[in-house]
Image (cartoon, rainbow, N blue to C red; front, side, top):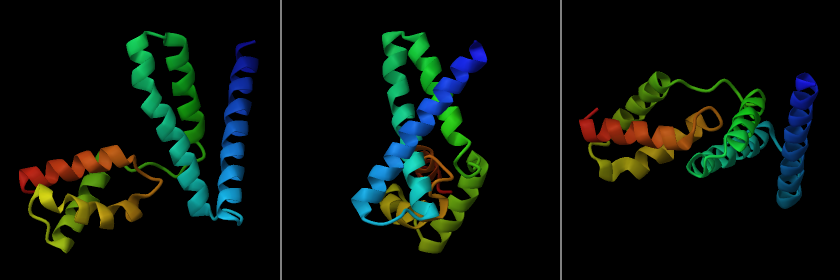
Length: 138
């Protein structure tokens, strides 16, 4: 019965994702490229991650477990995620290449870095790493 429930959740997540992909294709007016598909799936993961703190505050363990399971399922369809060390290495390279030396240059660094990590890293984590590097003087 547990396997059947897990299968229902997987099917539900896949259906929601397919609907999101179809809606995005209609929005853009063309079939989605692989990069656009990754972008939509990453957005689905981000929406669920953003909802987790609310359910933690509300103390709803069932919904928390469901969201975490949905995130796991979606992650299977995304490229291998970069580790914090890999993000740090890429961020350091970009900081040096654009000549950033303070937190004022955050936008400049993020503008170059985000296309390189798109779909392979959470934007909040990338932003956090870049801020740490810029405030510590990399």
